[in-house]
Image 1 (spheres, rainbow, N blue to C red):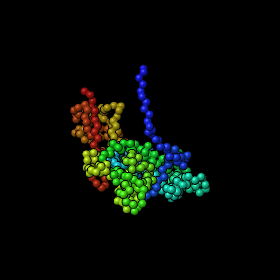
Image 2 (image 1 turned 90 degrees about the vertical axis):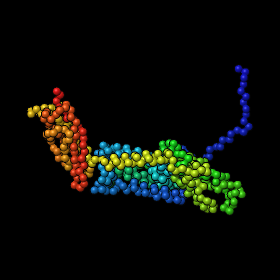
Image 3 (image 1 turned 120 degrees about the vertical axis):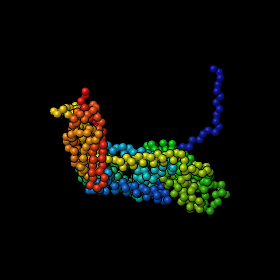
Image 4 (image 1 turned 60 degrees about the horizontal axis):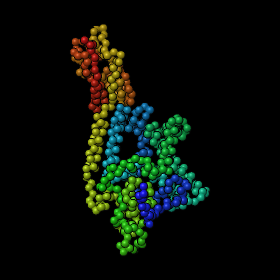
Length: 477
């Protein structure tokens, strides 16, 4: 082939900006983020919400109810106590409802105000800011921490680093013990662990969750939010132009550039952004919000507080960075009540209603019927037909209960062989062998559907009755 493709040289080659070197790159595989402390409305709200949930997490397992731990998820005995409510594996549908409600609540909140859960209530964020607080108290401000890391190892540096990591480990251990305390008696847990009397698996899980907390909040931090957490990836499917997110008003801020306080930005051809980079320095995930909405943004509002502080000092109007929508930034009017948000709200209300109905109609006991598998029926010496069952009564309450047993829709006359009034201790299962005997003249079919009726009469309140269907087999003619 003689045809040739002409190669045209580019006189303006693309200039590739080299990566910035980091003085502490030998210490980490990533460029470390030094988060700067900031004060403001949203950070005050975030701290108070974090303190509230942290206090609840730390204190709840220590509460007592009726002489027992108020909240205890006993996996070994498959018994989950929440104050006066006791849940069993048969009640796992309630747990499924809770997860469904939590999912749709997350979808609803994300559609309305973005990834605010991550910024204010996510445990990863709360624990990360606690660990950063330890850093600030021990190693100093952002600039001081950066300077400390650049210095060679010395006695002072070693002491500060050792003290910081000691605080991290101790707080991680306390977190782990508190978490395990939801699944084991917390008072005995602390005593057994620190006296080295805890079993192998209990000690293993305490140390495992200690290591996880230390690694996640101390070292991984924003990596959990940007690379591991799946919520960062699928949140965009719930966003629209009317979702409130932390956003930078480019029409007001550009062109950005430094200037004195007395200078008129209009004369200089500048916008309100003075390019101080404080919004980047306070961001826990290290992004520049001025580059637009990014999936790494956790909507914590730190950049808003930092920018508002600068605007206030410069004498400019606040809100250069704010919780706003894409439609407002484009000059339009945001629509709060839109089909997606209303749809999530309706589904959420329906799910909460179904959960409330399942919880309120839940019986405080359960009855399982096991019939004799060896023979469906037998004929006794009197020529009557007898069916044998084993009734298992589960007392789901936290008090001893007396149950009355009977049958319904069986025959005009029948004989009950076995106990009909049974005492079952709290959280216990009683197995009651029962035989039902019916004369042949009262049986007109080979198989009769009937009900076992179990009634519980509490000392205070209305009696509770449960019907469980079963079958009575007649001889085959």
